[in-house]
Image (tube, rainbow, N blue to C red; front, side, top):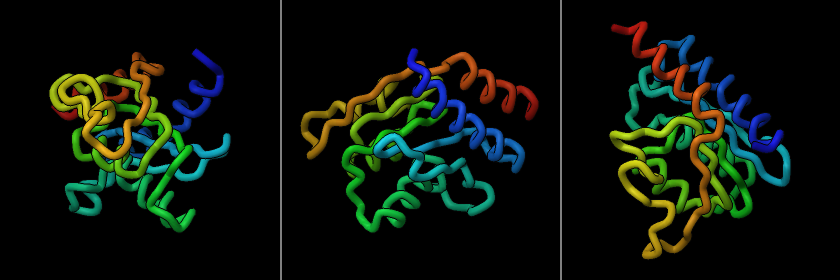
Length: 150
């Protein structure tokens, strides 16, 4: 695994910790473009009381606002959990170059585990992806959160 992938996934894990501190499911996301962090976000569904306040959606919205365009061509996303179907659809729509995710979401993963939205050839854009980046670390954060809740 490259140093760059580890560096950015560690930043995504820092965002996940922020979510956890606020009682949110600990998922963090980083968007990188041209070798620089463009935006960071973490889950805020409880705080915002909005179902779409996933880390990925919030990061995409911030990035689009920052560059003043909905197209995020050439950008890469690092997220601690495999995106759900909603987030994968937004990722494909925003035309990301590549998505790296940590833990797999076996029940509802929208990239590989349950659905294959990013590689769906019927969409306008196919997004490359790589799962399992720092998988153990990313999975441990989520497992601990739910274990502590029980």
